[in-house]
Length: 180
Image 1 (cartoon, rainbow, N blue to C red):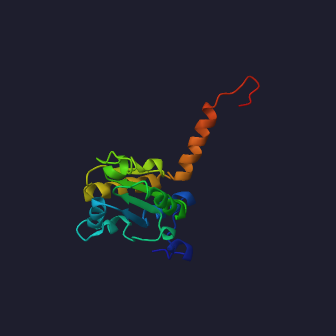
Image 2 (image 1 turned 60 degrees about the horizontal axis):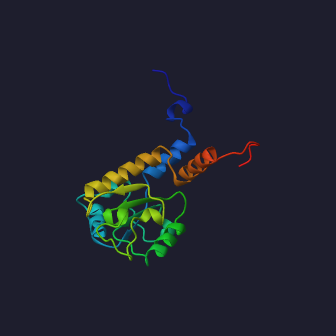
Image 3 (image 1 turned 90 degrees about the vertical axis):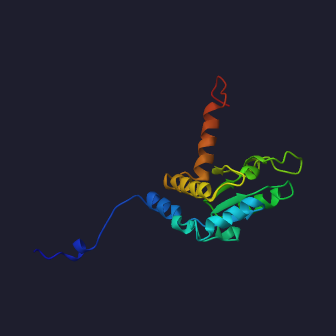
């Protein structure tokens, strides 16, 4: 048997840096739960031992926006809470993602009143919506898996904003001399 050289002993693989960074982000989500109602209790079940979200790399729950990259909005958001939620989102480092958990966060739920925000997409960009009242822990885990797939594919909020701006520029009406 031929002896191996020192370089042949070292396992080497090649990849793109962007793919490697997305892979690490995918498996290292640090959620910040913003639980205001029964959806917050369901999220507690998700991080418990029975469902164990740590299998998916999202068990490091942080209650500081500066240490989180995933905001899970679980429950009803009132008009008085909206500016606070927006400030929390803005304090999170980039890239950051948002999961809207339950119908109250996604559409206002059965609260059709002046004091309830009818969907948090009017306050901040949402990546994944989780249906249900309250949503099951399986649905929340499914949302985390779907978000991980988006992260692996390189879908970040900055890329979506850039694509939206490019689409707006392409559809903007132009005059005869080419100036908008």
